[in-house]
Length: 293
Image (spheres, rainbow, N blue to C red):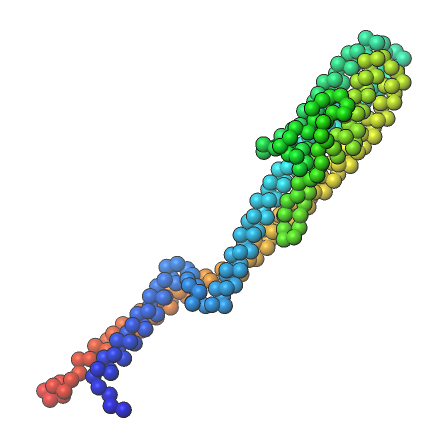
């Protein structure tokens, strides 16, 4: 094969362009700290990075969901604690007024306080959280309870709100008003006590005490349930945080470069390019006249 100056020049330019491109790649890696900047750099690793990015976005959404669910759980927990205190105070009033030494006057005073407790219970039942009724169930935009007397609600709240806290894992964030205030008979027990106090009915007062105890026990069961949900949220959040760390470490190992290694590679390719430039300049400067002189 006949080697001409034109072939030498084309090969020299091609090799210089190749070295220049490699030096530019090394410079990009050193400046960005990324080994993969386009899919073509490493198609297999790039696809794994894309999947990792998708998983990280999903984890971020799950953590936001958990944050929202935790806020609702804490709001219900606070409401149930307040409800417990209301029932305990009502029980104290009932016990004090169920004895023979109490009079119609003292019971009337007791009724006034129980009426206030009922109003406070109704306020808890209609508590709002982030612009929605906490105990509204699926009808979260509708006020659950309208009256301090039976039936207390024109349309009792039903259903539950669920939040996805992990892949295919859903959690009911809180109970609805029917479960908390009607199924437990909290409102009914308070109403019975207020009625018995108002009518000076000792037997009715005594009967209402048993209803208050039952309501109190049922509320404690709800508190235990909401506590379990809170624990589940904490555990899930911790697991997601650990998984997030693992994914970020895996992603970093795929696409990041070590700074020292990147700088060393850049210096090496700069030296290679300079050597190629020097060799090319010497070869290109040779011609027949150089040998004849």
